[in-house]
Amino acid sequence: MATIEAKLQALGLALPAPMVLPPGMTLPFPWVKVYGNRAWVSGHGPQNPDGTLAAPLGKVGLEVSLEQAQHAARLTALAMLGSLQRALGSLDRVASWLRVFGMVNAAPGFQQLPLVINGFSELIVELYGPERGRHARSAVGLAELPLGIPVEIEAEVAIDG
Amino acid sequence: MATIEAKLQALGLALPAPMVLPPGMTLPFPWVKVYGNRAWVSGHGPQNPDGTLAAPLGKVGLEVSLEQAQHAARLTALAMLGSLQRALGSLDRVASWLRVFGMVNAAPGFQQLPLVINGFSELIVELYGPERGRHARSAVGLAELPLGIPVEIEAEVAIDG
Amino acid sequence: MATIEAKLQALGLALPAPMVLPPGMTLPFPWVKVYGNRAWVSGHGPQNPDGTLAAPLGKVGLEVSLEQAQHAARLTALAMLGSLQRALGSLDRVASWLRVFGMVNAAPGFQQLPLVINGFSELIVELYGPERGRHARSAVGLAELPLGIPVEIEAEVAIDG
Image 1 (cartoon, rainbow over the protein chains, first blue to last red):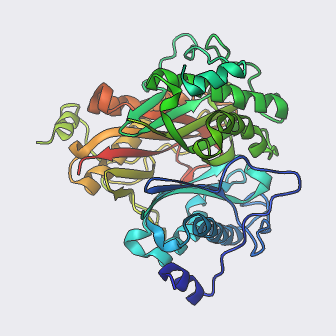
Image 2 (cartoon, rainbow over the protein chains, first blue to last red; image 1 turned 135 degrees about the vertical axis):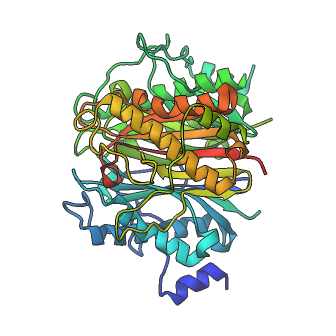
Image 3 (cartoon, chains in turn green, blue, brown; image 1 turned 90 degrees about the vertical axis):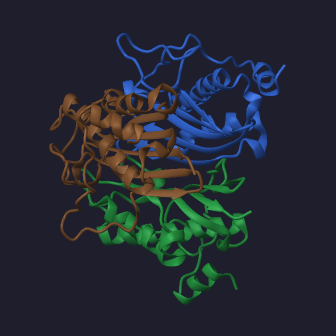
């Protein structure tokens, strides 16, 4: 079995199904664009195992607590790994994480943005190790996110040919 | 004639002149940075054919309707294509669209951000086709955009040498 | 002496120490990710010479003036250069600036975002020259930034092997 997939299983973590869009919504773009030795990952949000959006939705610091937002960031990592696995065949093909852009649906005055996105980064580093999993990162507060998701994260990774 | 330029003409679409900045404003950066086999495109907004900013300005969901914002995103695609044509000589040199970051000047509570940025993505995919035009994408709500433009979009593309 | 470092000295500019995090805060990511012939730079904010966050903090246009924010953007450039120097050994290894994403902690209605980020871009172009220092750029207003910093900037650069 592939190494990263085995680590996920050992941690008791499963990757969710592809995102289920609300009725009538279609997206004219893929979740992952692969070109040459790179993959660019579209903005992902937290998903349930069946691919539906994971509750709670809303502003972090108001409708969503710090702890709930950290969990949402971890679920977003799993959703992104699911998309990468479908695009690449195996998560072992990710040679290195390069850039992570973490966006929090921030209530006015909520500044603990890095703590939220740590829920994403810590899982990636746990799975890929301190060198391959290390990524440049920003964690910032957006005014609005699609469908009211509390966290949205996009990324760029290097891949093996 | 170049293929993409011919498609634009067949669609009755013209690329606008370079952006006309407000009096006294200068920008210490280019609209496109070309390096190796990549081009990074600075944040663009909607322009009129003469390069001036296209009305309406303001918050989407308040001063600007969803339909107006979608049209602004389409105009932003044309402005970006104009910059790419000037930087590369021909739009056919874009080998593949890689990453699109779509920013909406969102009024509080406006969450239909993907629908807005679809005005950009659909035109790119129509022109470049489903493989070459496919791009990783995020569509998010910003607190403020320069000069009150309703939409700003930046991108990364692969180019032929 | 390295060229860029000599230019900094001639301008009377010193690079700050690594960022000093508030007590109890740790970051599971590096300030710079180097891979192949690229470096991705995490979001940086303005720092004092000792690595602490530089005052004033807060919303630009409300608690922080335009001039103070421009200075914060210039300090952010110095902080980023410090991180690049530690990651690469010498700032001369930056072959070209590619992409700069400038985020302003914008008070409602503050739209002079490009003027703020010019404090960053002008220093980079002064140090690296009009070709190597040129970068694609967006300058936008965020709802919240970590710790209330007025400016956060991330970047991608090409490096010599």
